[in-house]
Image 1 (tube, helix red, strand yellow):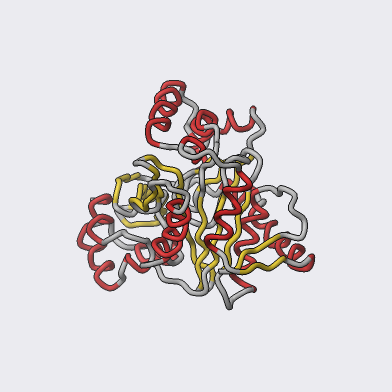
Image 2 (tube, rainbow, N blue to C red):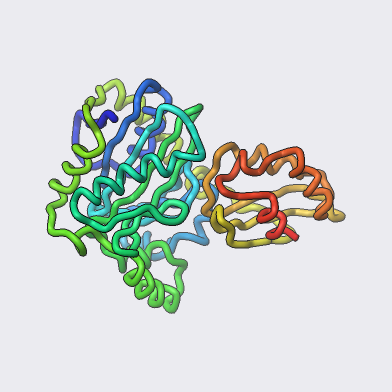
Length: 321
């Protein structure tokens, strides 16, 4: 595993680091790469999430908290300079081991510090039954980008206010709930931020490289896409009906626009993880009758597992019908 350094260690906005992941995946195909980064207070939400459902826009704007969309699935995350973000760029893509392999490296590094850490659920790392890290992945060509959080000493009250829709009761209950389920490394271990990061670097990587100024220029070109308002805000789907459910793949919200019970448009929001382009899958249902029989026939010939991680045909149909 090769650790990636920047020629200038100054803190950049979050989109710069997302662009770095994508650049490495496209231009450094031979090896596994790892790097850590921190940002000023920022909210980052998943590829298929509706911003209004996930972010308290009034609060983040009042408090100068940035907000961006990433290309991976999963839920909404708040990050600040005390939340260490970790990125892995893999040499190949495998939906079945991608989380286990790289999250186990993080768990092992925590265990070496004497912490009771383990991998749990879809994408979380826990210490003493409390969440300290959440992770996501997406595919770039035939490679994977795996990235996630490591809560070192993040202000959890700000986190909840930033990623909870603007409702005082929800925010109040959310802070208490998060404090009972989420933890920081410093709650369990007396270690400086620099020493903690160095421990992870030594534990996970065995060599390093420093990007060139040419690399940085190319990264900034990719970053421009992440800064476009149409990418950040997305498009609110038109719909006749909305269906929502919780599955092993995550929260799924499906909206359909129907005319005479024929599907004219369909969209799928949520914190699920993509394997292939979901648009390609959803287009299979356009101009088809909105019935259990018609949708089941399509799913007999097209495996939903190929598009959404951990979602099966039965769960998908149960939400709709």
